[in-house]
Image 1 (cartoon, rainbow, N blue to C red):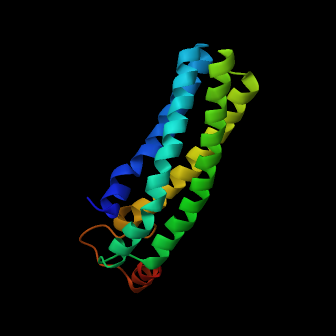
Image 2: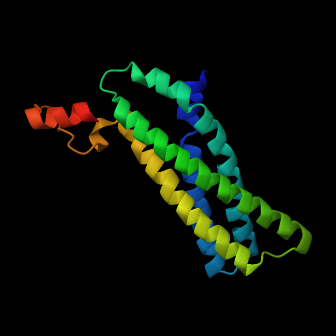
Length: 166
């Protein structure tokens, strides 16, 4: 298994982890369940750690993808730029989550201010990581690109040019 495989294998984990964490956090807030809140913060922490190998194997995945037919350098670069922002957001979420878990370990409670801060950071991280995943999907999944042409139909000159620009 090379770095490209690792990138493709792990890239869904941070997205799913933050999404499930937000779901658990919402349930924990609604039901006033400390266990669900802790589960959410633990998922945010794990997701923030998993984003590191995903990010650092991205360059290898880029080198692999560049040689494939239908892959555009500009799509890869857009994904890479989004990944940098997502990495920053996930690091901030991870640090806040670890601090929150540390406070819980000492006081056996999660201050509402920390819970609110982690919740806001998780929503922001979800937006950033979700956008990055969407842009990454466009690298090989032309059906999610704007201007995609249904199978069996020829692209017009304008559409073909738009695809070449991606």
